[in-house]
View (cartoon, rainbow, N blue to C red):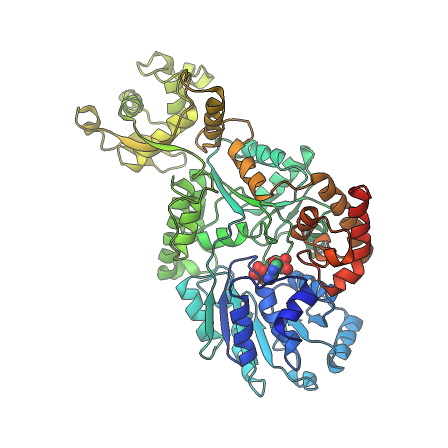
Length: 632
Ligand code: ADP
Ligand code: MG
């Protein structure tokens, strides 16, 4: 069979995605390949199709056990001979797999890198090995975020195979350092390098700067009830606390981190993959190799330490191309914690000053993403060296109107407040300053007698959130200083100019809700309100209006009733076959069914993701349901 027939027959897709065909052709011609493609772009097909065409058995080196099980499941469901060797197999399973290998039935063999030294390749000698695939190839590089020593053995393993097979490396990590390392450390020979571009148009990016992350998280989840998603936290402790919080609020959540024993980790991961639990709360230990395609949101409760990690983790949403959300809950604390972690690295990396400086620089880039006002997608892609238009229209910054505003007067008020406090011989953190300016009646303020300050309540009609934004801007500009300590306090910086007439302070702020706009129609006013609610700087409890309209745009009038029925049927089948739902069909396939409403097998074969095996296996039962739904 040729590549296009396999694509259609085995995988049920009508056409290749960008980059796939080049990589397949290169491998088939005997040229090494290095493919850099974002998560969800379809890297697996790039080597699975050649593996099915080439004589012999392809070896796929892949870092995580869960991934292998998944991929092998998916391949078997599509009717392809595949197996894996890793530490999860018991003696008899291992023997059975070896038998299958010897008999030449296996076209794709997945192996964990740790096993390369152990497996005796001469045992496979019944098979020729035309192709070695290195998935998640960035693991070979120290500059990457998932370095694994076992990956350094791969080059030697390849050398041990005679004749030398074609080598194809795949990763979603695009930075130069990492790419160079892959080429060198895997000893690729004049590889074809494919870089498809990093944009994932179906992902919506959002940054929130909430005062209280817990509340913000609960609001986020409330909006996304019944959909599946991941919440990443920086520490095991935060994972445990957050998971407990969610459970107490009735969310169907489970957790994953390296502190749990193997058994619980596996159970929890399976619960999530098989949709028995809808929310996974985890550290970054979770996810690499999780190919669950129906993850419809990824929320970062803490900011990761660099953009690469963020994009990789966030990219686990929407793998099947359906619209999905990536939300970062950010506050300044995140930066300080990461700084601490980088400079106090326990692995002894701290000793490597060059690496540390490099990591601090990466953290700075991440902070710009979180704190900035410009298009989030532009920032992300810019980091990977891609130029884009200045506004993507599908991120929280693009959907928020920012205006350059003269904030000289409020700035003077804030600085005066800090000055008055200093006159009384005290410095305080941001919250106290904001409370004084807004005229809070809290106990501490009365105890200190701050309600008698001349600056007390002079900004009573400005939201705390907005005062905080201006305060941060003043710190940014050096007009105020944030003195680090056990409790960071705000002190005076270069503030004299502010009180001379000529010094104006300009900053970009999300537009504040207007109190009255008599000249506008009510519809315009309504749109305005929706806009404002989207501003990350402004705290409202409502749903973000513009966001849901984007999702609607992308999901083009799906028959939700039918979608629900299809999902239920899929779940029943998956349970019967003991595979995750998305192995039966991805969400994208079900959506396509809702769009095309196929009532015959011929029509069904035209659905995205329906190949000949799935057509035969599921065609009847699904078209029956669709026919019934359409009232025939
Ligand atoms: P990656 O490894 O690059 O993150 P995968 O190989 O897991 O991505 O593929 C992501 C999803 O895209 C899978 O559900 C896969 O079946 C689907 N896919 C891959 N290639 C195509 C294609 N040509 N057309 C439609 N869907 C595709
Ligand atoms: Mg992959």
